Length: 176
Image (cartoon, rainbow, N blue to C red; front, side):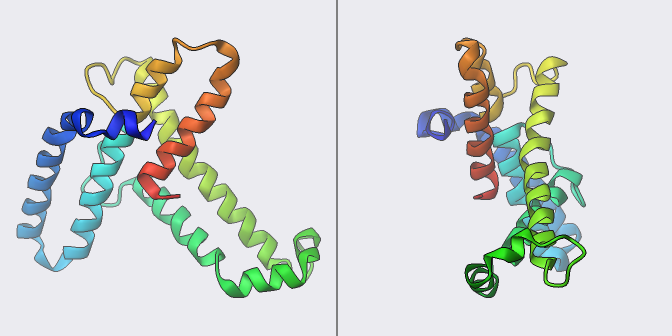
């Protein structure tokens, strides 16, 4: 899926969007040079979200970018060597009731899972809704192209294909 969308010949269609986003970043840097890190983060997010989901990121505090950043921050905080050792030595901690002392690992893992699922599902629903509303006609993204290909496939394979597409899209954007 990734190769079909991002192979060298196919990736040329994203060049106008990349140039537009680069111009926006330059304008933002000229307006607020002290916000350099924020402008670069917005630029890289906007390129990824546009190519993968055809999502137009707002200049500041975009809700979808915030969801992805939160999910990644929580996930990274959860994947510490200390937590891995504790769970390896005491696997029963994942079975403790939520009210029990020591179950914070379980609660944190659930929060991480919920945020990750939100990060996977929300942009995917955005693309499907835009396709249903014909708002994405004439525009392309990795998810939209593959959903159009999926329409031609056998109905029994669609759920499996959709799951694979969600995972590929999340990997392409968030490196999940």
